[in-house]
Image 1 (cartoon, rainbow, N blue to C red):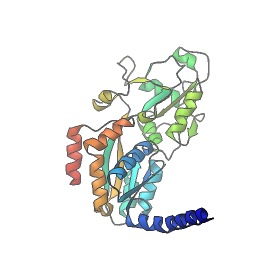
Image 2 (image 1 turned 90 degrees about the vertical axis):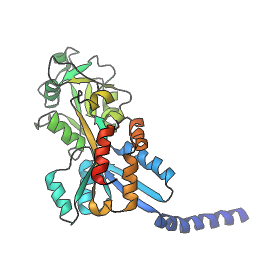
Image 3 (image 1 turned 90 degrees about the horizontal axis):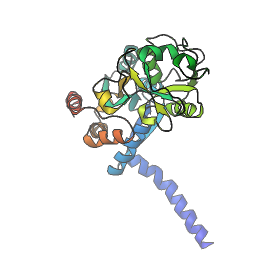
Image 4 (image 1 turned 45 degrees about the vertical axis):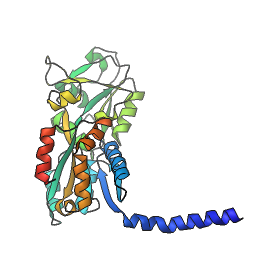
Length: 292
């Protein structure tokens, strides 16, 4: 009975003290890109271990969701795997604070196929024809007489927008493409489907193959390695961004966190989860523009 009372007292004390402890911490909210969730969570985990008074809350939902939260003022930082649109930027700035763009990592947007698929490379035109539905059967690419199963992202995803603009040249996806709620869902679908093909961030690639891509038929195809992405040889590479407003940037805990993310340590963390560090010369340029 005494033990029960002691436990009850401890639980009650914890319930009282926990909200107080949280209120004494400086909280940074991060919302947006599903592609960047694993990166944002790892950054938060490492940074909070080193900075005990900071709480970083990271959630996904897609780049569009993060930018919408920035517009309505319900997040400090918006993760985005695509550049913010002019109309979105205007909506944020209607609240009276300028938008700041911070490139924080590089990503080779990978084209996933099942391990059983013998294909090793594609050119951009063929990739476009696959996802717009002009090429429908693997036999057209020299493999089995089986329908190509397309796995895509939902339209609030920055990855979806980027792929549509860069690969499909703003044409519509095939109506038979299955829209998945996140990059992990796309990859899992391809892992289970011998005849599937999808796309997503390089950081998620486990248990499937990533195809080499060439800009044009007959040209060399390159895999999405860090060297090929940095040299712009891999044709579907991109920056990953954090967006915030000037008033949020004025907070010391925000500036310190972004400065760390752009440090050698922060960029090394990005590399450990499968993304690519920004070249040092570009980092210096970004830091200078932000006054870090």
